Length: 86
Ligand SMILES: [Zn+2]
Image (cartoon, rainbow, N blue to C red; front, top):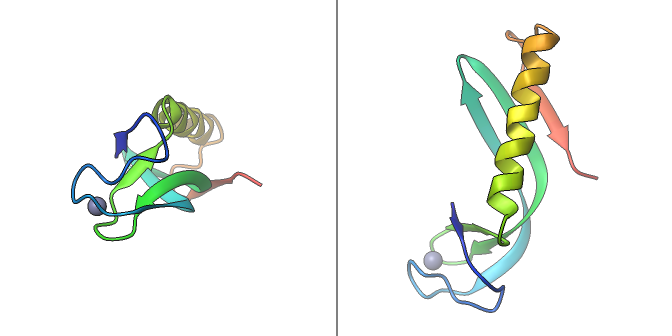
């Protein structure tokens, strides 16, 4: 997971083309698993490296943290919690 400045840049890992996609990411913390899906990101068509817009990775991490907090409050430890951006 890396950050880049513009969507025009090629992949910094392999120089491949980046494609705008909606991805899903899973996060696990202290045995609680949450999943965010429908996140807009740029994905390298060659190596699969994922890039977010500037600041995007932080927001995704913040959203995951909120889900973890919700999971604890709602005692959903034993279940998976998904969030979808529609
Ligand atoms: Zn690449």
